[in-house]
Image 1 (tube, rainbow, N blue to C red):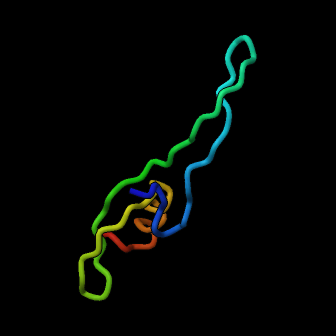
Image 2: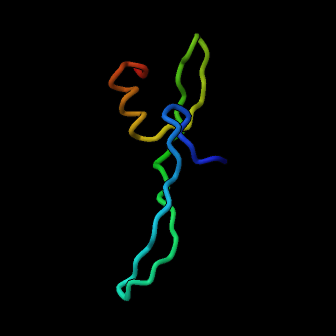
Amino acid sequence: MARVCEVTGRRPQVGWNVSHSNRHTKRRFDLNLQKKQLVLGGRKVTLKLTTRALKTLYRRGYFA
């Protein structure tokens, strides 16, 4: 399952864990993805959305 927002196209970012002794190890910053059903064109569609995209869609009135 690809961890990509289907509305905004955002993907996980990569960075470093930095310990107290300043060792660096790779890590991933995953998205907060939620599965939501949205009615588009009279049909229910299940989308994986980030919470930021979900907030925008609520504000624009796509959810009742």
